[in-house]
Amino acid sequence: MSNPMQPATPAPAATGGNRGLGIASLVLGILSLCGSISLFCATPLAVVGLVLGILGIKSSARNLAIAGIVLSVVGLFLAVIFRVVFRIGLNSFLNNWTNRFTNGSY
Image 1 (cartoon, rainbow, N blue to C red):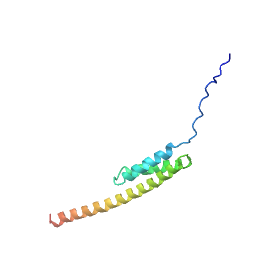
Image 2: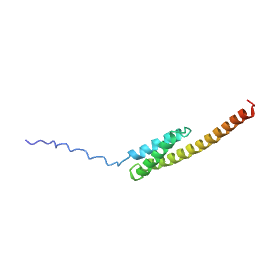
Image 3: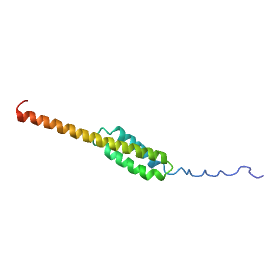
Image 4: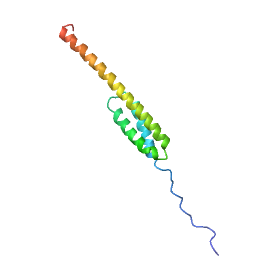
């Protein structure tokens, strides 16, 4: 008698593409946006997120890569704005502090 059961065939490999770059870009964009008030961590996160988003444009996660690019650019812009405001405020504070001691009105 013959065996009616056929041997199991392996499932085909998933062809979803490389979604990792788009997801990483999105995550780094969100982190750069949240950390944009920090003067040191937002800029590297935004730059790496921007690069990964540009590399991930051709992957299957194109929408995630575009969202990561947008969030990285916004995070980078906010980091630059906060850095400029911080420098202006620090410069003004130091000028006032110096003037108080040079004028003797402390």
